[in-house]
Length: 503
Image (cartoon, rainbow, N blue to C red; front, side, top):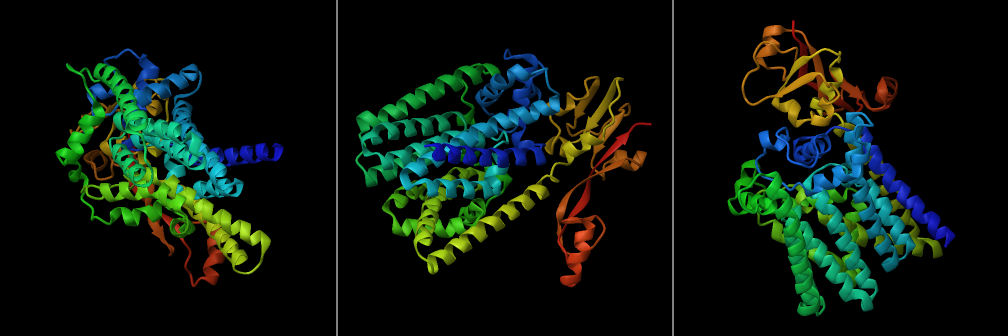
């Protein structure tokens, strides 16, 4: 038991450490996270009672979102409000969401360990910690990442149901309830995942409509609607009961307005899934597991149904199917555990496969770390605020659209308490501003001249050039070029914003 306890602690520490590393190396946010970030800020700053300064009243966004996630984050972080800097408060808020997601992943790990053994649990943790998209985004305030917690808990319950037939009905009902809740409150697409699970259950088992499916659906629907209608009708100042996620679903799917953001081919998710799994071994092992195990097929069937159904919609993004990644990882962990067990008892092919598996995982760690460093340069708005030299006198700061979309948040502007930040509303800034944060082609730059450049990610280069920063530093790059024909990888940084001070 002591060894098991130490194992659990090590696995927990690893996932938390990787999550925190991604949070600290890349602390800024983008426009997709802005609603929940600004809403959390407003609740902490002005209190839960609706205030005229709430950001969404001025900038409502293209589709409405629920305030429930922001209220939870604000409630948990409330004791630290006013006691730490606004910058650290933003990190803390993100850390709360990251903690919730890590705990949900650890619940899946626990379920995998009970179903397949401790070795499978370890492989699940190792595989998950190498998955860049998962570890990078679990602390980001996207609506998908709130739903991710609930879909992970549901997956963990389905796994436990596979291992304990006596408790199957109870765990299945709770899992269906959580999926219903996720679809009603946070992301409507998880209702498709719920439907996919129901299809699989009816094909592989004989669930009771009366005691399992209907109660779970009704309770999830009633609880979810009660929460979102009462809270969001108030915050959105609606004259009648308001359901943000249904409004977003109607706008994006029924009216097909999401196509304005691009239309992708039907096979988009087939190409996106291996990228999300990140480690090539996970794709191979999950396929082998499906071929060898009926349990694995029952685990992955709902995920594949979900991907197939969602592929019918024209607009596609990888984050819409992020919920399936832990299931594929769990099946791959089972296959990896079998290889590990066989390698411990005999040499030959199992040992070779284990070495290849270890090498693939190690290389995935390096690739994930590289992706993290590159991605941290994708937030010129946040980097621009670092260049502002605050003094204790009132000032007006003009912030253009790119800066607002790439890191400028209310938490960060609170670091300048006597300064007033004005967002770009499509009009050109008037005279009278003390600072401008604008794109290089802006008329202010041409008129005023000078300013401090804000560099951001512009691609990866293998040749020397202006603005290219080699991996490992110049000394390592010089040595590497001697053996690589003058080639060495580096990140190309380009001028994205200019910070200018009024004269």
